[in-house]
Image (cartoon, rainbow, N blue to C red; front, side, top):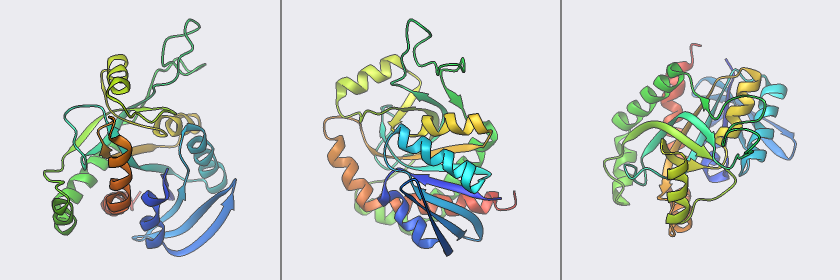
Length: 250
């Protein structure tokens, strides 16, 4: 199996890329793809850049150029649900494009020509990633202690719906509108649902796992930058290590 790993920010991907052994670097479409072994697993990892278009073009190249068998999208997100705090982990159940609105031609959020308003992750994929996150939270006590030094304690995991769009949710008003329009959504980011659309087109399994970096309010830009710089890479690499231990036989 060849596992594709994507993240939208270099800080989310740098430690993953550094950990890949026997790296082969391939440049395509202004992206650098790193192919090699990560914890014994054949992988291709890439910094996709922010936003739906950048992520979709990168995912398409992952599939057509490298023939990946599945994709993991990792990185940070802003909390929409009041249950979530900075440092919590969300596994995507359904992925919505919250800025898709072609009314009155079709329903709000419906992806043209698909009849779908969201892309649902198969339960088996969710369960595998949930087990990986559970192992990470249970076993990586050293990292948990480091988080506690930054007052990130009692980290929890949630499986739930994720909203993607080319908007950085950075005010209580934006957060309220998103929650009102999509009440099942627990967090927001800028790429996952676009990658889900590409993966659905090509029949490639996808799992999106996000770490909460901010609470999507007026302080979101400060919290997000600080969290990404300090913790995002460690989260992504640690979770992937546990995930690979579960799927390396596939």
